[in-house]
Length: 200
Image (cartoon, rainbow, N blue to C red; front, side):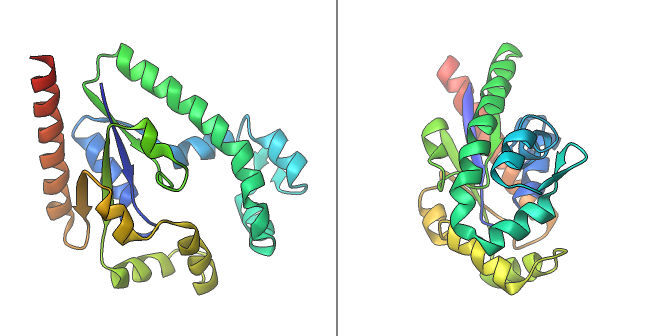
């Protein structure tokens, strides 16, 4: 089974692209969705212990957690030390289920793929990109987003130019949905062909 890591900096259109892979019948494990689930489950107690006041009604209050981290960015590794191992476990379960189901290839949607060393766990890398101007426009439209928060997020991410250099596939979302979908379809076709060659 070929494991493709899908990544891209904030605002590049990664979530939309991941959905396109799903539309073509590819199994996708979305790390952000997994974190949302963990924030309603296994991560609640350890996050509250490390960051008191960040949970309520049995879930992590993301806005409060974000507020605390903006005030003390140096504590981010503490949160990652709690969350990343739990995400890895869920990822392993997904890969195991997908292999059992006979999937030829799957996609791991990992926002911080290079930043967390996850490229070692995948066979191919697909990077979603767009122009810096379009990226900024998309991100600043998000609720609660500020220039300061955007700058903090960008500072944590490997630059887009570096990601593109390390990619096996580049998906440019600067144009229409149809143009993006055609790029995804081409990649799915290449993966199916390469898997067929490997099995032959």
